[in-house]
Length: 478
Image 1 (cartoon, helix red, strand yellow):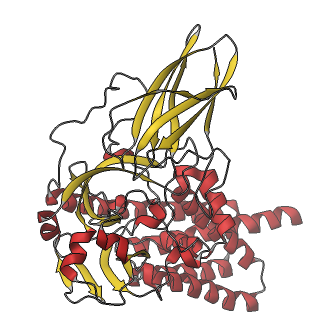
Image 2 (image 1 turned 180 degrees about the vertical axis):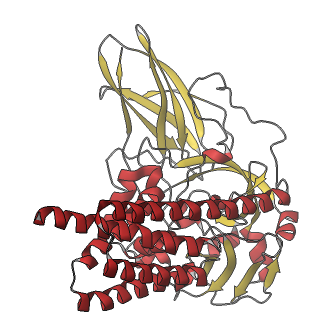
Image 3 (image 1 turned 45 degrees about the vertical axis):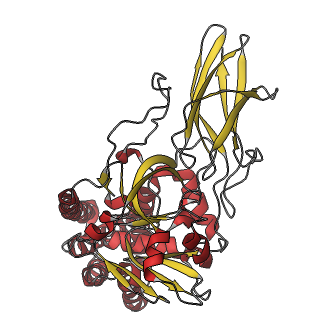
């Protein structure tokens, strides 16, 4: 009987945790915010680098969903832990728990009165629920069901805010365009990645669990700091000076063979032109790209000003405005730099400053010097036949371009493959070949060589702290 009672107490406390989280999330969602996302962002900001790297490696493109699940599990575990305390100890512990959640809602990246109110309400419900405790399994089921219903209602409210944001973006209209669908001669290869990645197929990687919502009619980009001529530009004013360019963007966590990379036709203003209008002052050595939530990535000014690094302030891709998850209304993109170093999304400000600025990722242990994308080849297709195999894929080596792609079978000699027509040096390049293979199991590896002479490094290396290396390897049965 004692065991059953203890189990019932745990179930009841867990159900109270679900109910409290549901109340807090619904209050935050009434203004389009999310208590769960605020706590998740706090977890991402404070978790040790090994924890973050392991989460990214194991969860892949589902990292945001995994983080939200972790918040939910943590709330339930906290409720169970608080229930085990004495009545005298529980009250200050619940208050501290609520204060910590409220602090996450009021920190600069996620500042929101609704989120703070949601955290306070969740703490109140948690304290009252643990004091009264649901009676039996039926009471626990009622708490859990109510909490789940509130969470569902909150998610519906958030989706409605997101729908309105996308409607506002559609009213911006086309930005740039693809008047002629680009071709490279490999259009008839089934299973091969598109030459231009569809807007809905681009990978998403950032520390926010959900993108901020920005009114395009009120948004302005500020160019401030050590400049003789500060600027404040609307989306329409930026579009008037924008140009199109083709380039691949690659996540620093993109291990060989993974798909955290996409090739787009981007639309943006060259940073060299913006800097020419702003006129940097003496001592302006860093360009800080600052998002609306305060997140920053900084870049050295001189190579951007001279054009040695062809950077852009991007406002569109593939003929459309940037999607919310990809940085609407503007982001900075320097082809050849990993996404983590190329510039902030949801841009609000470009600030020219000195070397005293410290970026978000530097504080987390990543190097301060920008990390450049290394040559890499990916195998998209490996189709066996009776005595041959059809193999195809993509390769990139921005900003210089892909000179050649080679394959080897079973650790044999490297053999060149046929390349598609190059779209642009900074873009990815598709390739294919046919291999004559004897029956049996074979291991195939691919590598890329850039025009600068850099050969893809085949030594397996994890993304932190200098970016991943290694060969994409597939096993094929002929």
